[in-house]
Image 1 (cartoon, rainbow, N blue to C red):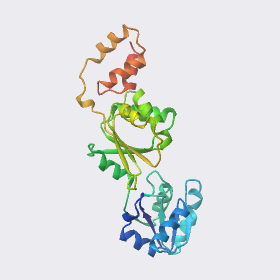
Image 2 (cartoon, rainbow, N blue to C red):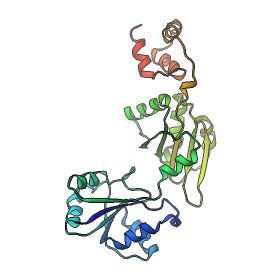
Image 3 (cartoon, rainbow, N blue to C red):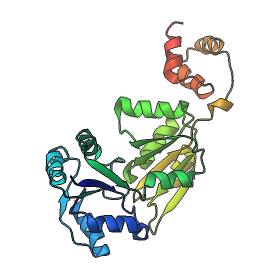
Image 4 (cartoon, helix red, strand yellow):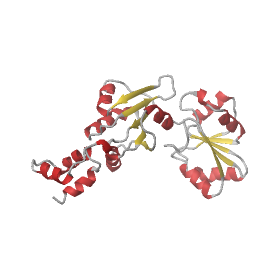
Amino acid sequence: MGTLYICATPIGNLSDISSRLTETLESVDCIYGEDTRRVIKLLNHLNIEKPVYSYFVGNEHNKLNEIKNILDSGKDVALLSDAGTPLIADPGSELVSYLVDNDVKIESIPGPSSVIVALTLSGFDLTSFRFIGFIPKAGKDRARFISDLLTTDTTTVCFTSPKRLLKDLEAFASEGVLNNIVVCRELTKKFETVYRGTSKELINEFQDKDIKGEITLVIEGSQKQNKLDIDVTSAINNLLKYDIPKREIAKTIALITDMSTNEIYNNIKDF
């Protein structure tokens, strides 16, 4: 049986190609990638000729048996994303899970990842961190994501698009997200730029700019362990006297305690 190689490729700088990646691409029988044009460009840079097939979000389920049959025949297959490490906010998880269940040998060829690069540039506590992929655009998932930023003390790394960056920062500011944020643009590329500040400070930075390129955000964990230790019940009672909406009371108290907005709001319902 053949081996599936999960191959991390450069996120912008071709000098980041490892000798192990080159050796792997030279040795496999065929390659599957998100964008065959980008795979071929990489292969041309390395002077390697291999059969290249598409594997992207729209067809990944249909490719499972196809790739499994190639591996069953004793041939080796490389899996590439457009850039960085496959499966990280890219297709491939379903394939790897399927092959694991079928006892197929899998190897991961480590390499560049915008997630790790951005984290190491952030200057934040990396004792623990979470990666959530692209920031949800709307609905409950977006509300939950922003609410989590207000309560978690874990560093968060995520992606957004240049067109949505300003809208995301404005949402953070309006919901009281005071965390420090690092915006990484075009990591490892010629025009790599790193911006630092709160959501409000970054809004001013990007307000009149035509933002382009790939964006990775790192958001510092909430520092609520340094916030006030207050009598929540008394605070709720006092604020209710001024006819402040219960949801607004919950948001306000969450900003200065270790409690979440929803936890406080559920308590207010009993008043």
